Length: 235
Image 1 (cartoon, rainbow, N blue to C red):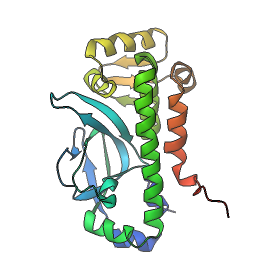
Image 2 (cartoon, helix red, strand yellow):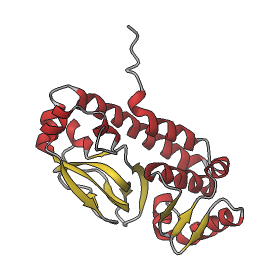
Image 3 (spheres, rainbow, N blue to C red):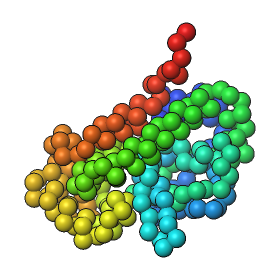
Image 4 (spheres, rainbow, N blue to C red):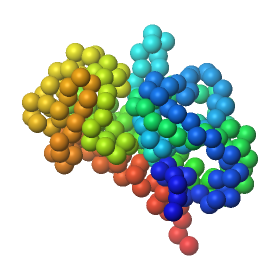
C-alpha cells in the first residue's frame, strides 16, 4: 500500500521515488513557492492543503489562473525549460508535501520513464485548467465563478469545510472584496454555503454544482482523472 496521498507519487515505482530523493516539507498558509522572475530550484508534490497560481500585474493586482491540491506537482514547468517562474504560487490553505531538487527531478524526467509520462499528463491538465479558467472569467458571472471556485477547492482538499478569507476570494476571482461579500451573502441566503469568520462550509455539493457554471465539471474531470487519459494514438 502506497504511503502517499499525492496522485503522481502514488503511481511512481519505488525505484523512481528513491531517485527523486524526496524530503518532507510543511506548507503553511501564504508560503510562497514561486515568484515571477525567480529561479525554480525545487519541485513540490502536495499531499494536503491548497496552493494557488496567480498572474500578477505591475500594480500588484493578481488573478488566479490555477489551483494545486493533492494531485499536483508544482514547479514542473522548469523541466520543460522555464527556469524562472512566470507566476506567483503560494499556499492558500496550509498543508504538507514532499520536495525534490530540480537536479534530481530533471535527471528522472530525462530518463523518459514513468515520471516523465505522468508529469506530461499533469501539464496537460494544468493547461486545460488555465484555458478553461480564462474562458470562464470572460463569459460567466461572479456568482457562477465563485460557486465553481469553492467546489474546486473542496475537491482539491477533499473537504466540504475549509478556511478562506474574503480578501483571498476577491484576489482569486479578480473582483473587489465588497463584491465577494455580496455574492457570498446571496449564496448563504440560498442555503448553498455557510460562511462565518473565514470558515466556509458547503452543506450540499450537488446543490452548489447547480449554481456553478459548466466550467466546473470540465475542470473536475481533467484535474481528477488526468492519470487515466490515454495518449490519443490509435494502435
